[in-house]
Length: 129
Image (cartoon, rainbow, N blue to C red; front, side, top):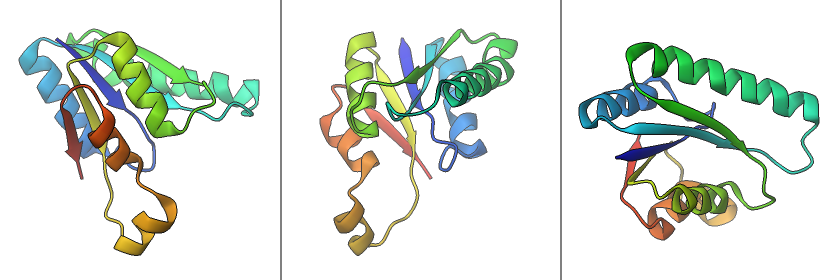
């Protein structure tokens, strides 16, 4: 089994990572820990993000016996499109995302990354708040 964790430092709280670890461990899953990045992000920042993500994957998953691969996605798509595309590319069996409460107006004005992933993903999506 393969699980993709769509990491967002603003939403991916310890609850999200704890749930992801428990599911991966229980299911014997291979974990892809990924985050998106804008194409105009400076190389130095990208390297920092890669390093932080690698450290997080090592600390939470690898050190506890769960195989984990980390990726910073820079494809010029929206974050939601990036995650859905990557999930399909890696043929993952489940996506885990963090969500935060938004007002109806907030969803209308800003859109909803989580909503897009849930509706467009080819596999089940577990949302954790």
